Amino acid sequence: MPHSLFISDLHLRAAQPKSLAAFRCFSTGIARQAEALYILGDLFEYWPGDDDLEDPCHREVADLLHDLAQHGTAIFIMQGNRDLLMGDALLQACGARALDDPILIDLYDTPTLLSHGDLLCTGDTDYQQYRAQVHSTEFQQQFLARPLGERKAYIAELRARSQDEKTHKDAALMDVSEAAVTALLRAHGYPRLIHGHTHRPQQHEHLIDGHRCERWVLNDWDVAPGALRCDATGCTPLAI
Image (cartoon, rainbow, N blue to C red):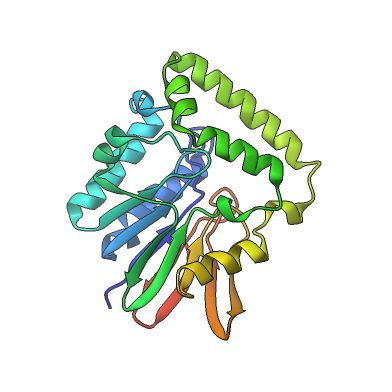
């Protein structure tokens, strides 16, 4: 049956060989049976700019995706919070097309809203302020003008600080806000919602204005590599 696959939060990097091995198996195996592969953010642990494409890990991932596209699977990539500096050069290397966040698609006659998911975590006001800053064109232009090594060092420092801050934050703050989910689904006509970011894979059901809306949260590959398979009959989680 025609179907599409959805993944996010792979955080691919040389220091995590198990995730890389799972991605190799996935991209050369079951992904080839899909009409389309949607990557909803955080493909890499971090992305300092398209001039880091020749990093061996980055090049391997791009080549695997390009081979998958050549095989006939359409590939779509959405920026996540860790790889929001992805540009046209990376997309071209992967044989992929960019996705806006959020974006509403017709998925086998079911309206489906796709998002990375971090825009829904409105309870974490510090993060939302940071998100607004790094999504600004001015910030990105200034950051990309810095030498690659300097950018990598800054991101590594930022990641370490973020990990430390998470240990002091209420876990509920880092999950999606019910009010934000409701507002987004209402604004887009009560579709199905698929997202990542929160690392809490599960199916949820929301009753909004009398409409029942599915919400699927995708896997964190550092914990358990997985995908969501969707066809005309619905969606099913797949372990990888």
